[in-house]
Length: 336
Image (cartoon, rainbow, N blue to C red; front, side):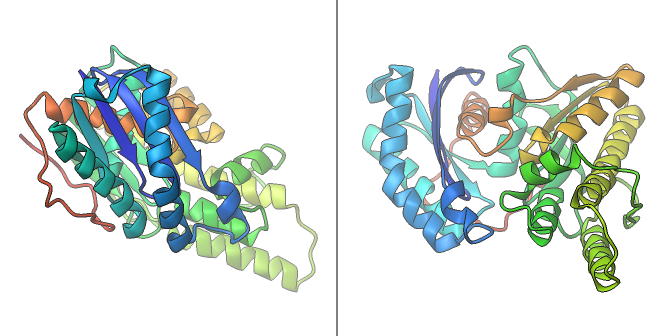
């Protein structure tokens, strides 16, 4: 079964062809990073206009790379939220139109849920149950995936997502956009034990990064006022350690308490080298299987959307053409 996936939730215009939910035949991503970098972040109006310009081209490229004729596509899946509403509407409208014109099923996908399925692309034999840490620019969720399309959200951020904190601290330190890769690169040359930054204790499996972000900014501001010399690398490394430590601790705790000895990560922050290294190490200590998607499937892409669409389709779950973009939708537990 061939599913065309479309992803336009933020500043990447992406299309992919995935066979049977796990085999990627093509995965095309047009990135707008260079455009938005000069503004220090994504400008929604510019992003949506670029999606309009590139969506047809990207879909055509996905079909060409897969060497698949449009008539062979069995279904089309697209992100309907969360994300920037203007960007979401471009991909969603294109997918609906294509579905209607070709008389094939249309499946609307929650972007956060889509990230989970990146693991089933990288590991074709992987099956639930497993613990999944979804951590990105807008979301931080700790999930028990009981089965395909059946999961329990046991933890989430109470305020800023981890990726959002990375972006804001990177901007404050003058490291540019996107912040995640910038912090990761600079932190490799810093002393992560130099500063001890506090994290709010929100209890259970929930997260909070707003206080950490403020603590780092206030600390650097104080250092500058006192005209004390400091290394940006040390600040970045210490900040990154604080974020990674809390993500790893709660993920391992959930795995042990639920007795599910499989852990996977997903989302843009899953590309962070420190998070990969520490979670892999801690999983090994507790004999927990560890899974992490290829780098190209951590950031926003359409292959994960097509994969999620396939697993919904085989369960007979399709979407109505009245489905609208929902920019602020969150991930909630889903039971059959």
